[in-house]
Image 1 (tube, rainbow, N blue to C red):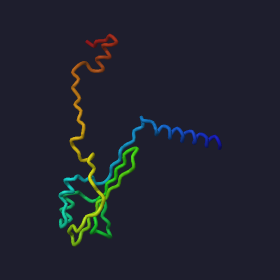
Image 2: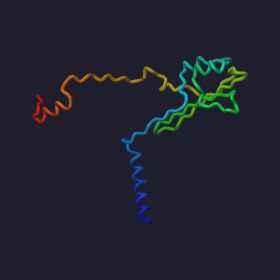
Image 3: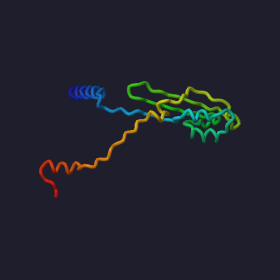
Image 4: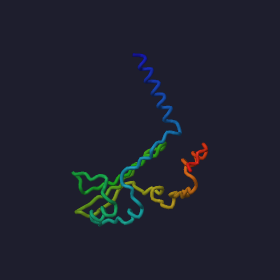
Length: 142
C-alpha cells in the first residue's frame, strides 16, 4: 500500500511541475455574448423584445418564471489572470424595454479590428522538401 501512495505523490508533483512550464499551452476561454459598442449604442428604452433580439442576439439567460427579464452574460478566462464575468440585464414591461442594469462594458481588445495582426506568407517557388532531400543524398530523380 505504501508503494502506491508514493507513486501518487510523485505523479502529483510531476504534474504540478509540468503545468508551470512555459511549453504547456493554456487556452483562453471566452463564453457568452460578446457585445460591441456599436450594438450597445443601438439599444434604447422603449424598444420591443424583437428589436433588442435583432441587435444583440439571443440572450444567455431567460428565466421561465421572470420572462420580463433577459440576461446577457460574458465570461473570459485568460491563463494567469483572474476570470472576468460581466452581466447586462434588460427589464421589459408590457413587451417593451423599461430599463437596463449591469456592469457590461465591451472589451476593447475584443472589438478593435485594427489591432489584429495579419501575416503574409510568401509562396515558396523553389524546390520542395522532398526534392531537396533527394538532391542532398545524390538522387536527383531525373
